[in-house]
Amino acid sequence: MTRASTFGIGREQWRHAWDGLRAIGPLMIGSALFGLAFGALVRDAGINPWAGLFASVTVVAGASQIAIVESVRAAAPAIVSVLTAILINARFALYSAALAPIWAAFPLRWRLGLSYLMTDQAAVVAMRDADEPDPVRRRWFAMGAALPFVLVWLLGTAIGLVLGPVIPELWQVGFIVPLMFIAVLVPGLHRPAELVTIAGATAVVLLGHSWPFGLNVFFGIIAGMTAGATFEAWWEKRRAPVGDTP
Picture 1 (cartoon, rainbow, N blue to C red):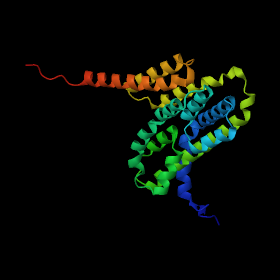
Picture 2 (tube, helix red, strand yellow):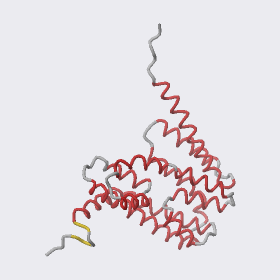
Picture 3 (cartoon, rainbow, N blue to C red):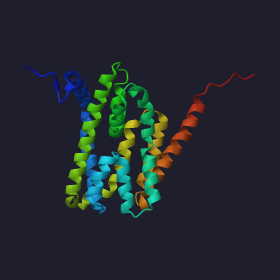
Picture 4 (spheres, helix red, strand yellow):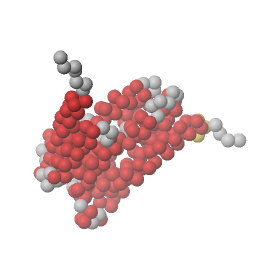
């Protein structure tokens, strides 16, 4: 006789979670490598490994974590590190706005748990299931995508912390910041204004790689947002219908 549930979770819920895991599965390698890069950078910066692991467990935002560590390594003022992290993580406000109506029917504990586990990739996967009418399936699908993805990120961080001292200098660990910055932005490209945003941000981040205090990321974000907003205004004005002339 087979049991109807495992760990108190029904078969249907396991199936929904498995669907979420399959949806995010191809991105797992990137999560592991991202964690590996962060762990290695923590060791390279001379930060206590336990502090680095604690950051991955509590923050769960790799791009901002890497930017902060790079700022610390460059002896940047604390305000630069904090503002850079805030700007990088501002995108999560957009995810919250997009996911709020999809998750509105979830119990509070589910909304809080999924919010903690939310990443760029998990947010995109969760929004794919937005039209699913069953809220139970939606929440288990989202959990099946978000939780394993974060666990892989934590495992990658731990491995990076252990292997950090033996990673060759030729790997240029410090160059991880602009590369990961680009990796986070690329999946969000859908409109011309977004293309302009990432082009402007990427140009400043890469060209300013040698700037002190990790300011290239800070000013790259500002440059990208400014370029994107300016282009969006010009584009909308250009597409606006022209009124009849007398």
